[in-house]
Length: 266
Image (cartoon, rainbow, N blue to C red; front, top):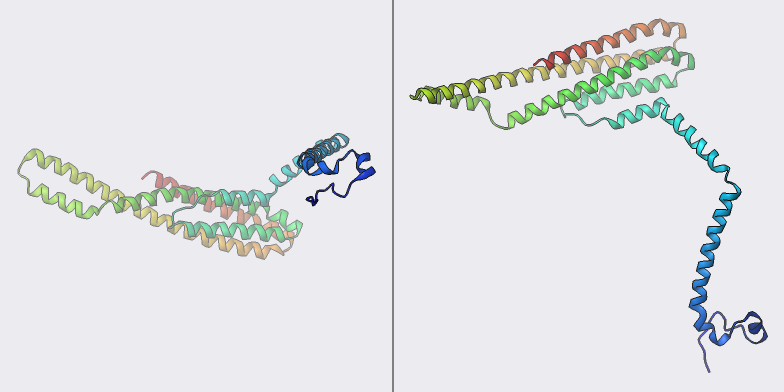
């Protein structure tokens, strides 16, 4: 008779009896044996992994120590910290984002230029790099505050034309005979006029802020030019000019903080 082929069909006679396999029962026992084989393979894999851990357990703390050292070194790397700061910054108002992008780009250019300099020049230019980083942080916080004010200005303008509302309220005041109603209209008119004056003052300060940022972007470009020039200069010359550059950056920071204080008093 014809039988379906099984993995055991070639085993018969003495060989089959020696291995304890019945060729006629091979097809029936095949699923059970396959399952048993999979279990044994998984068990052997687990035992091999456990044996490896047991025989080389001392590698685990060493690997953990190396990982910790690598983590500390990476976290202290200036380039890594600078990248983290750049990525953590949130978008600003469309009006101020281009200015900050140029300021931040100037900082990155200065950092790369100093990084490419010789060790002596790098050490001498470090105060400039530190002062620049502080200036960029101040500019970002300033732009964040200006973003809030700019968004407020835009929303206020979208809610209606204050000039038309004031004209309408003036008409009602002039054409109302009831004294109590006229008094209410006059109070509303005064509130609208105050709101319009406040919005005009805010728009003026935002224009000043934009001019202030323009000045800083130009100063950052000039600073980048100075750093490029000093990159290959004599270390003594670099150390002689760096205090002046750092002092100039601090003045820009002071002017910006003073202007921000004026805006807060609006």
